[in-house]
Structure formats: C-alpha cells, structure tokens
Amino acid sequence: MKLAPSSCTCRVNQILSNKDEIISGLKLAVDKWKSRTEDDGDINYEKVVKAHPILQDVVYFGVTDNLGENLSNFRIPPMLPNIQPNNLFPNWTKREEKGWPMNNRVIICDRFCGEAVLRGSDIFVRGVMCADMGIVTGDKVAVYADLNDGSYKTIARGLVLEKYNGRCVFLGLGKACCSRADIFKSSKGVAVEMSAKVNERAGPALPPLHGILPGKCMLQNLPSVVVAHALSPQRGDVILDMCSAPGGKTSHAASLVQNDATIIACDKSRKKMASARE
Image 1 (tube, rainbow, N blue to C red):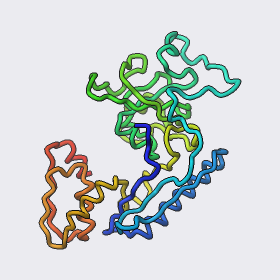
Image 2 (image 1 turned 60 degrees about the horizontal axis):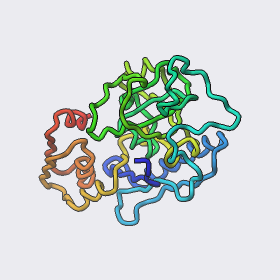
Image 3 (image 1 turned 135 degrees about the vertical axis):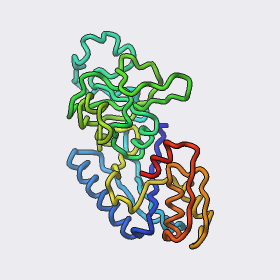
C-alpha cells in the first residue's frame, strides 16, 4: 500500500469545463502548494501538470523527479537528533514496546482514506477510526492506515489506541485540525492536515485537491476512465450501468455525450447508491 503512485489522473467534466481550464487551475494549486513547502524549508522537487497524449478529457498530475528521503520504510516517525522522548504517556508503560511513537499521538484511518492520503489528500473526520486520547487542535500527530483484510473484526469508530489490535501502516505526520472529541462527533470536516514536507510523508508530497475546481474535474484512476471511452457512447443512446456506485463511470458517460442520452444507473448496494446521488 505504501508504494504510492508518482502521479494521479484528473478526468475533466466536459459539460462544465474543458482541459485547458483544468490544467490552469491545477497549476495554480501546485504553485500555492509549492510556495507553502518552500516557506517551510522543504526539499526542492518538481511537479508537473499535463494533458494525456491520447485521452482528450484526462490530465496528469504528479511528480517528475526524485523526491528525496521519505518515510516509506518507517514504522514510526524517526527521532530527531538531540530530541528526548516527551512524557506524553506516563500511564501507558508498554507503549514503546507495542511499537507506537513516544513523541506523537496517533490517529488511525481506514484503508480507503489511507490510499487517498498517499495521493495527496488530507484526512476527513469520517475516515478516522481510532485515535490516542488527549489529541487537541494543532497537535502534530502520527497517521496510520488500518489494513484489515478480513482476518479480524472491523474496528468500531472511536476506538482508543490502547485497545487497537489490528494491522496498520505508517503514512506520515500531520497537524490535527480539531480535538479527538470533535473528530468522532462530527460528520464532516478535515481532521488532519497532512504535512507538506517530503521527509514527513510515506509517499510523494502531492497537494490535496479537495475544493479545487469543484464539479469541473475529479480524480479517477486511468483504467476506470478508459471504460467509458471503450464504450464510446453516442448522443441519444440508452445506457445501462448495472454496477454504477460510486458513479464515476456513469458521470463520465454523461460527460462524453454532453448529457444527451438516457442513462440508467443501479447498484446492489442501497448505501452506495445514496452516496452516488450526493
């Protein structure tokens, strides 16, 4: 899971926008992110935004050179020279023995959230499953992703870290945007803003795209984008998508025909269809 892609693909909603507008918007986002990391004294790296050479509604977004040392091989954040462990956990004597960091409180997100983090996303409250007690706004937290493969019971959201017995992977460091209590009582909002520094992440330092050109583009894996192009829908067609949630391919088909077709979207999961409607 920690072998993060060095690039992402954005699919253009051709009903509301075009490739040139999306490229310009993404470049502005990159410039803003790059200036932020440089202000923080980060390692220099180059980013790229470019059109796909074949698919006319796809834009590549990623990194082009060696990012330097990141945390992909670490189980916990490395200790900085001349820094002594903080006395954050005086009542948990076996914490270090369990393999948890001593200088940072911990947040564990679900696997889907973890995959998004490796593509540049921050962590939203709905993605957090487990956390240390005592987290407050502004804390520098160590972020992990749960890797439940079905071999153990799904953890209940709100679990205290001391009771966590699952498998997880370290993703990097971030800043808590709200307290632990607010994370688990809120239904929306950002819980953790991931560090912009290359040497504080387990994957490429890509900027989060939430709120960038809303409705005009979406992150979508290239194989999923190819599906609608292979279908080659035409205006006036009747299209049946029998496994449509969460709706990416369905909306892509609508984009290709400029909303001039009858598209019937269904899925066996009522919950997923409700999410797709949103």
